[in-house]
Length: 372
Image (cartoon, rainbow, N blue to C red; front, side, top):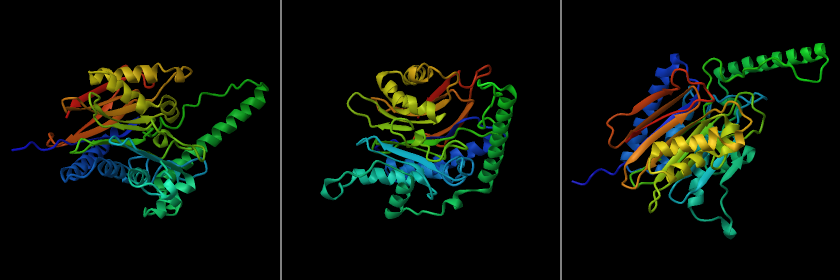
């Protein structure tokens, strides 16, 4: 009897700070999505379709900062980023600062599919990245439902926005008063701890990696961006090499899929998804490859030399030369919730990874992995 073709789904719902009170809810979400996507993989569905389905379900959850209910920008509106990369022909599709789309990952996936098809008239190339109003219009023209952007704002996201905006306004007023009193040009403002550390709010770009029964690998990420971000800001979920990477197994090169989460500007400046993938391909040992890549290309990166704290997480899938598959994850954030399932695992495995006791978020790194 022929062995069942192997398939794998691995996903995460953000790297940042997950409150212990919500831990069970995060784990339940990851388990449910793993099971749903494996049903698609069992039916022979392709990697792009399945990874899109995984991230779409992450977007639909009110636990995540993606799609409807995303963090609001400084103007109080939703702008989302998302991208998909497939490892067979190495096509990439992304949307940035898109409004009025409940599931931006669907637009990114459609951009990939169009690039895999025939060219446009007169030999024109299909776009790989679209932003803003143009992305929304393209989505509508290609059969993806669009909505009034206000419908993407939830009671929860609006409450958070008002709370954060009030704190920002109060902080600004205090700074102005202190400057007037001191009459100094030097900024002696009080320490501002930021918004992401309160109320269990996480820097939560969500992501997934899939290997289908034909050995094709695809990766996808989606994010609503940071709270009170500048209107029009692009995050790593929209940028090539930063948020996701995928590469099918070729000759002696292993198959790789990576997705990242964390401080967007840090991830973008280091092209972290690609950097970790390249490091994994250069090492026979997957754990060594990921840890070395994260250390050299992120923690010790010359592009972040002025940063004292560096926040990021990465989830990786690696198909070895002998076709065995490993799922690995690592992070410098306080926590990262990951889940995975495969044709050889009877039920999903979900882990809330946290820094070890004594670990310092932004400085310490922890990682783990499992053969699947």
